Each structure stands twice: as C-alpha cells, then as structure tokens.
Image 1 (tube, rainbow, N blue to C red):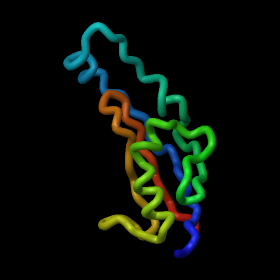
Image 2 (image 1 turned 45 degrees about the vertical axis):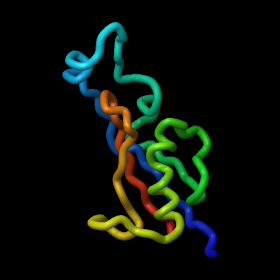
Image 3 (image 1 turned 135 degrees about the vertical axis):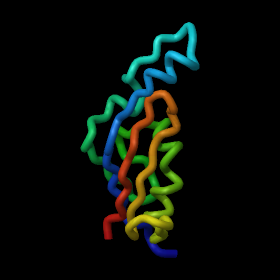
Length: 104
C-alpha cells in the first residue's frame, strides 16, 4: 500500500441561515459563531492525508474526513478537477464550505 499524500483544506465560505433558525428552532439563540465558524475564510490546514490537522474542528473533521482520505489515497471525485473536491460541515443552520486539494 502506498503512503497517503497530503491534503490541503481551505475554508471557502462561512454561511448562516437566519430564516431557518427563525422557522425551525425555539428556546435556543443560534448565532453565526462557534464550531467551524471560528475559522476565517481563506484559512488553510494541512492533513497528512489520513489524520485531522492540528487546530481543526472535530465536528467538521467527522463530516469531511472520508473525502480527505479518498484524495490522500489517490482517489478522485466524479465531476470535479482531479485531486480536488468541495464539501461542507453538516450544520444546516451555519454550514462552512471547504476546498480539499491533494498535494502531489
């Protein structure tokens, strides 16, 4: 088996769906802060292609690690440029989007 290649994780966009918060929540004040929202757009992290980068969000890692491992092991996602993909965390009220790029 070949060693995994590094994968760069770039924070592309932070979003907040206030209309969904207003419609689907009660008794909790949702803010566009916390979790992945502590990252800055353009911020980069490097994974060794297998493990979570230092300083990365556990919650976001749970959502994206399968794609990091796939890219790190040489795989590609259908319909996007080879060695790349765009994905997001699963927080529907305040999703954060990431660009993943295999570093060859």
